[in-house]
Amino acid sequence: MAGPDFDQEIKHLSATMRTIEQVLDVDAMRAEVVDLGEQVAAPDLWDDQANAQRVTGRLSALQGELERFDGLRERIDDLGVLVELGTEEGDADSMAEAETELNRLKKAVENLEVRTLLSGEYDAREALVTIRAGAGGVDAADFAEMLMRMYVRWAERNKYPVEVFDTSYAEEAGLKSATFAIHAPYAYGTLSVEAGTHRLVRISPFDNQGRRQTSFAAVEVVPVLEQTDEIDIPDEEIRTDVYRSGGPGGQSVNTTDSAVRLTHIPTGTVVSCQNEKSQLQNKASAMVVLKAKLLALKKAEEKAHLDGLRGDVQASWGDQMRNYVLNPYQVVKDLRTTYESGNPSSVFDGDIDAFLEAGIRWRRGAEKAEAN
Image (cartoon, rainbow, N blue to C red; front, side, top):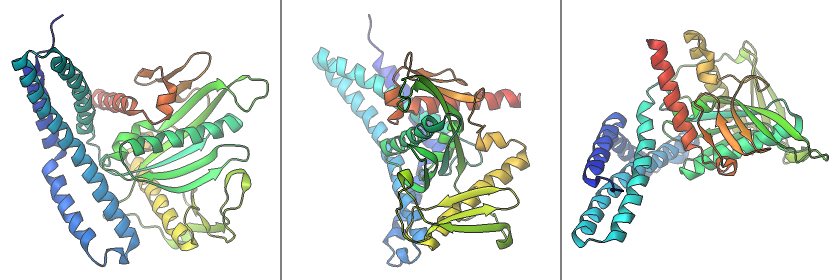
């Protein structure tokens, strides 16, 4: 069987990288890194801690993106050198290594190319993710915690900072709900395809008779606000409640009323934050979450497509978008794209890039079909 045409494959990869560079505007990203670097070097940066965290987080994320882009381009160049040497010396081992690297590069460039499909109004934003346990009792709460770990591990794999705003633990195990931000460019556009109802089927570890249990969890993804966004909330529209933070099993982790719950009275939107040490810090963080959710709600209502920003989050039978089956067989399958993986353990450990890519391509196709 003939091997690949390395010259053509490398030319194609290089051309794709040039297209990606133009679409992502890599030059602008480099200029922003320089600007953010100057801001980080300012001696008064940490006088405003919220702004300092935003600046340093954005800088770290952009640097990671550029390292990814530059690393791929360097690998393509190195592949060309390896092929040239292997061809000149007739080295079969070098050519086999080149073929393996070519396949890896094609997949890596394809994954990066998906980024060019993210052109929605908020796709370039950071993401605010909320996970809620649905039907299924303690198994649903445990499933919610598994999903949170999955997204956090995905972020860690990509070196994206994660900021946890609130974790509400269930009595026996798992989470009632959790809200966290993933600070990375295009995190919202990438993760927004995860919004909806997720379904788990397994032998319940909480059932002493070892019966199979079906449980559900809802994932909501909204874009994080930027300073240019206009969302004004009158004080009289917000009810503030304070309470003591709690840990797993009801364990107290704070002896003061530092946790804060904000309720937006007109819409009934409720957010809470308990992960900071002071009530003022928790209130500020909760306000960030509330404003993000209200902006998403406002924009969605204006465009009459709330599901497009928040997803279908009923978390019960008949409306799931992805199934995680651990018994009687093992498979994770997205019901919209039909993409599936036979390795649930890897998926729960954050290996979800293929699902994200399939979801983004599916959404783009659906948008084109709707436009036509």
